[in-house]
Length: 228
Image 1 (cartoon, rainbow, N blue to C red):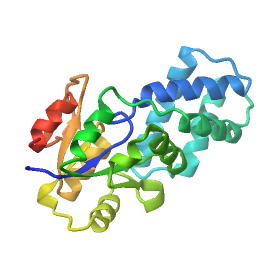
Image 2: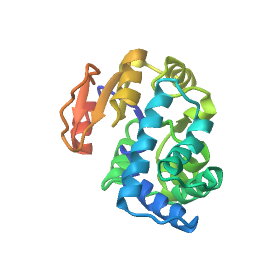
Image 3: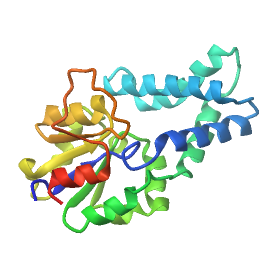
């Protein structure tokens, strides 16, 4: 095989994060007594995405991100709500949603037979760990690296250096990062000198100077790339 050390992102690479996010947001927002609709959710989702990009650039820490995204939403609508309480409830709701992308579990079952497989994620540790357990994918990987526990986020060199140092007999020439984010997964892999494959199921044009080694629109595409 060309690559047999797989560093795989979690959200929107294995988990259907958009579906999980929407379900968790609606549940937490309405249970907190606020009126929710698709426009409110879309606004939150955009705020959340922009703040995770700030995290990747080192402009905000995760503890602040978790609360401030709801503070911004409240501010936009003149709501004097408890952002910390909503943040906590949302985290619990999200941890209970572990919808996988169709074919993700079968994909992991297949690569687990011939490769060493590690999950790399910037997600919130408590939330991610419960989702890994409840979805059953924790038994299909050799390890999980969560930025919150490492103390560094993707795409930083510190994150990837930690990952490489903790994987026994790590051979950079046999490793590949597989993820959906150009600014997190692909940029981080490039900085670390690791091959990368962008998971791009929608076939979006890459209007950026960040270039993956490979692209894959399906799990089958990725299996061909690694030599399965």
